[in-house]
Amino acid sequence: MASWVPLAHRRGRIGEAAARRHLQRAGLRFLAANVRTPRGELDLVFRDGECLVFVEVKARSDRSWTRPSAAVNARKRRALSRAAWDYLRWAHHPRAKLRFDIVEVVLEGDRVQQVRHLPDAFALAGPSRYG
Image (tube, rainbow, N blue to C red; front, side):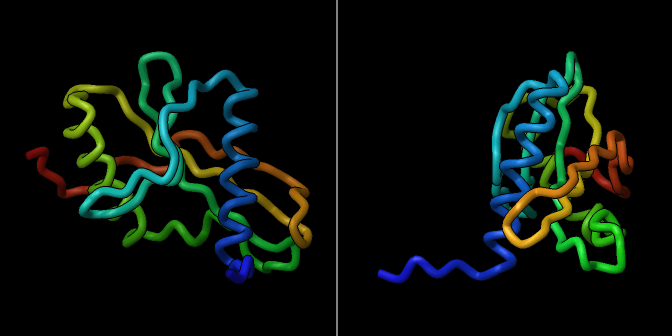
């Protein structure tokens, strides 16, 4: 069986691992990775005190002209919000404090050059209805 992995998937794995290490060193408690719901996927889920933190990881080459976080547009924010609602329902946390963070990982080849944590990067997109 071939062990070839598409570049985007390899970058994603490297980025998520780097983001997880970075956030754990910052004191956040890891809860889950790659949570798939009927309405989307959450890259990482952490707890920061009483707050649930949904983390979108964006890994890009150091040759990219734009910040990795620029890829988290309105459509992506709505999808992440819907996935977060699903997670809250599944985890029985309907009234939990929550926030959405972005972690940018800049790569040179397969090596991590920089990790930038953007806490509270965007609000829960609406309109949404819990249910």
